Length: 165
Image 1: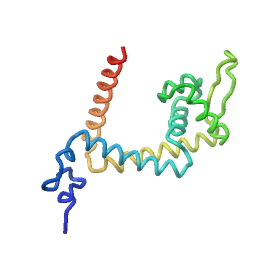
Image 2: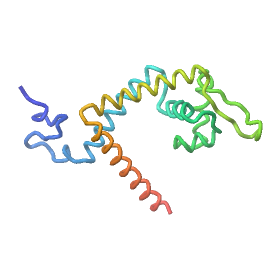
Image 3: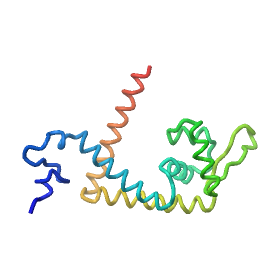
Image 4: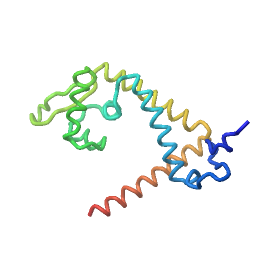
């Protein structure tokens, strides 16, 4: 019988003669991210929710009502690109878009009762995915991994901002 290690599988060890990039950190991060994304995409598809719609629902679920511009900033989407996302969620009855009485040019978005229920379900699914993926690690290792990934992302974001200046 051939073990996962012999096949270059999930143990992170290459089979003899396998290319060295299979054990590289960048490749392992990419594979892990791909695994997490695929698991997440499969689960949210059961709700007929796209990744962008997920971001909107989860953000409004955590923050409460927001202006469309602020929502776009929080989810990292160009404000013009939020319009079709928001419209699709309004059409499905998951969010409502009201004119801000203080500034009639501004739209305020909030979850409907149905949207709140779906956001709760999606939050549960997110927690389930995290538990499943991180199950092999101790709680301390999970926390350290999260911290290390945040450090990498923060450093990368800083480097990108320096390049843009």
